[in-house]
Amino acid sequence: MSSVSRNQDKIKDDALPVETREKAPNAPTPSEVDDYLCSKLLHPNYGKDLNFKKGIERANENNIPKIQISPLQGQFLSILIKSINAERVLEIGTLAGYSTSFISRALPSNGQIDTLEKSELHSKIAKENFLESDLFPFPNLHLGLGLNLLKKLNLPEEGPYDLIFIDANKDQIKDYFIESLRLLRKGGIIIVDNAIRRGKILPSSKDDPTIDVEGLRDLYDWIENDNGKTVLTSGIQTVGEKSWDGFIIATKLI
Image (cartoon, rainbow, N blue to C red; front, side, top):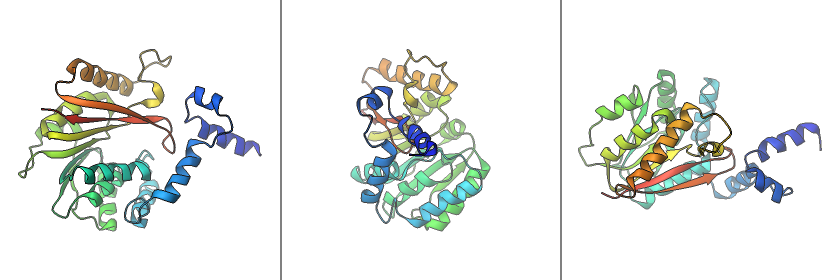
């Protein structure tokens, strides 16, 4: 094995917690497992859609950060939307519209998706991607600072949102979460992406916390102090293409 290959394997292995790598040194890397799962599980109209792939290429050409969800994560989002028969979805953080495309594709033709984005460039590229993918229902893209837009946002005329996907700056994540509860129906779902941060959310982490980590800790503290009155919540750790991270999933109880 060349030194380049060894270095690539090390980078892939770094997605795993240290104790896992030590116990299974010859095990496939999470990225290799992701590749296998993608080859077996991606749907022609979702993860395998060539227009979705073109959207990522367009984003890369415009130097948009490569922080979109993975295809498997996108299909997981689509499955959640279909499983609760969601008709109205709110997304906070559009980026280039990759996750938005999975949301739209999973909604019924009479569905509604609102997506919030602060960057004019990201919004421009996202709209081009929506048109390329011929999305229906077509996403309503709102340009501006996420929290400001969220506070001004009214409930859809048809009723509260069924699912809200939060993939935005984590320094204000608690405020996003609380505002989202206002707009969500009872029994609706909130998903907060990138909520594990390679374990740095732990107060015992040796790394100095970033403002994103501090923001996530504030949200975890809020959920703890809520004591189950407002939300039923779980946290899921993930490894693979997007390294070691995870998400919070919550359902509104009242």
